Amino acid sequence: MMLLLLPLGSVQAQQPVPAIEKLLPQIYDNAREYLAKLPSLSCNESITSQALKKGKVQKEVKIESVLREVRETTGSNNFSEKHQFMSVDGHPPPPKFNIPFFVQGGFANALGFQNQDKIGCYDFQLASQESGKTLKLDIAPKPNNPDPACHQTLKDYRKTVLIEAASGRIIYVERTVSPEDFKLHHEVFFASMEYGPQKMGDETLWLPIRMTAHDPKNEGQMIVTYSNYHRYAASSTILPADLR
Image (tube, one colour):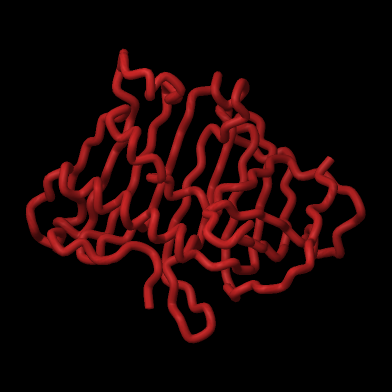
């Protein structure tokens, strides 16, 4: 059983690029279904956090932890994200420790495509790759858009989505904002998420397998891999460690 993205019947490998007008509604529908079906879960995460200067690593911290993504209420698509740090650089985590660069909140929300009413705020460019096996969708705000609904759109927002043509699954998402939005709105400057099949009990779900993120000057970088997924139904709360 695959939870993420139902097959797009009109999209097949080696076929012409589908019309964007037909593809977009299916992507929005599939993304909403993914969020609606995503269970509360836990998984192992391996984190590499780095501080860099002129491309050279000045400090690196490697963390093994357990990530819990818990749906906040029944029927809600909001998830709370908690990390239980198991080791830091191969040792038990101290009560306080420094992480050079740390990003939270992207696991359940990386797909996007939740506000279909704002579809008119963006330009979409669709292309075929790998002899039609993959579709590449580039998204950017429409310039000088007078629609009031688009006024809060981040000016230099860019998003690229790779779609497996035969199945319609999203296999990769990356997103970039401007350095100004990074500072003013506390948005992550660059983040990417790769998806793949993950076993969860007797099911195989299409879930995140790797995330990367960095700041505008690439002076802070984080790489995370995810594995060993389980459904999570406990009611206890794990507080995040002090990251100062």
